Image (cartoon, rainbow, N blue to C red):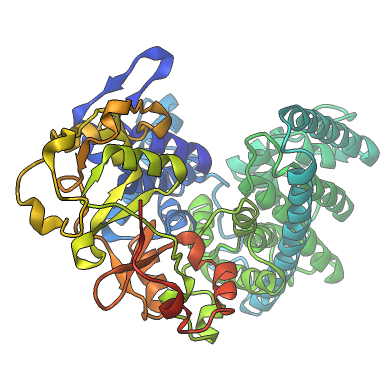
Amino acid sequence: MVHSGAVVAASISQGRTNFWGVDTSFSKFSDFRNDREKRDFVACGAAAGVCSAFGAPIGGVLFSLEEGASYWSTKLTWRAFFCAMITLGTLFAVRNFDSMWGQANVEKLFSFGEFNSLTGDNSNFSIWELLLFIIIGCLGGLIGAVFNAANEHLTIWRMKRVNFSKFRRFCEVICVSLLVSVVSFLMPLLWNRCTELPTDMQDWSNQEKDLVDNLVPFRCIPGKEYNEVASLILTDADTAIKQLFHFRESGANDASTFSSAALFLFFLPYITLATITYGIAVPSGLFVPSLLSGAAFGRLCGHLLHKLDHTNGTFADSGTYALMGAAAVLGGMARMTISLTVILLEATGDMQYVLPLMLTLMAARFTGNVFNEGLYDIHIHLKDIPFMEAEVPPVAERHEIVAGQVMSTEVKCLRPVERAGVVYDLLRSCSHGTFPIVDTASGGTLYGTASRSMLCTLLQRRAFGPPDALDDYDGANGGCDSLGPRRLSPLVQWDTIERAYPRYPTIDDVEMRSGDRNCWLDLRPYANTAPYTVNETASIQRTYRLFRTLGLRFLCVVNHNNQVVGIITREDLLPEALQDSLLQGRNAHINGAGPGTFA
């Protein structure tokens, strides 16, 4: 649902579609059609996805803050909050449609069912049990670390042996689906034990009675018995999680529970299948499998504690331990803390678990971080996505590195007024997204920047002037001062250029005629004359924070004379690139870098 929400939001932000050959473009969406607004829409869509999946609007907003957005602002906060509010309102109306929007059913507000105190006004756990919850969190972090390591090695194998071929990916999906189906059938079959349905349910809530009706009588007498393993594996995950959370087992009353053997037989194969399944060519998620396997693990811990206590009621009910186990395993895999705490609180509707969940998730995060990163971060690195972490890489903190050491000195520059053929050849020869514009008369002083999409649009529309518009511009005296205020090429309105977003024309769409190569292309009306820059002697810490905080794609590096000597991209600020820059001396950029190369 997180991915689906992000995809829908990214599509809506465009305000247009070419679906079935129909192009719909609305001027009212023009302000949203840029990369900055698109990123905000994706973050809001992720918040809406979490809200619709778990009924947790605040948790969805915090999820976008913790995992979905690289830069957060007050504007994005209220946007995500508004989006989550509308999502919850729609979800609330749909769930209560059967009551004709009268009084709402409280049980439908909580995705994991409503938790209630089993001992009156007291909490369902003792204060000293917080230590046990921390231990469960540590075990969940260890399980998550093993899950992440196994899935990482399996993903590397897929990238080498499977992902390069569509046919192999299809065959892998078929094989994994067959494996999951066979294991899901064999597990209840191997259990081959029937348990009597609970009969004494006078004190049970309607929620618990409904869960009893969902128990699966696999190879048992319907209406009288049920198969414990089949009730977990052959029912939908949402119902199985509720069963693990809400079936009572406290003290001497353990008649209506899942046995330790059944929980173990379900937990081990299920989490193994989740490890194999995550990463194949199907839309699969991490939340629900982690919650379900974690709930089985937590309930198993609670059940064993009751057995050790001879069911004297010393420990909390197994449902409480199931909730802690679900949080521990999911926190150990994804390493989320703030958002996951709020999501589980909103999904259960019981504030008594605030402190236990916080302690459990922090313990899971700290334990998992000892061994590896979270699963999301692992897959980002495996896909070679240049993602910048919130903190400056440790290699930059330990060593004295300046911007001049990490910048790329092979900069392709343009003049404020350039030949159309020169621009065309430059776009053909490299794939850079932005080009600095420099004034040649002053030795390469930075004038501004021009994006690749803008240059391709101008060439496609042939927005250039005649070849004889300038006489001595190619000489040594050519510069911005010699041009004057006159316009040397037809002006293309900015709205016309941005109307093509995000499907800008490429250089392959441009037809350069031989007679147009010497024509002049005036870039002054379109140049960004105030680009972000950094001095070549600036520290890498300052450069990194400036780059990430502003969400930049490039950063021009200049010397004390404001001449372009290099350019920095995201790849240059990754830990691997910073490590390579240590091989260069602090003053290497002074000897090896000069003003940028002109096209």
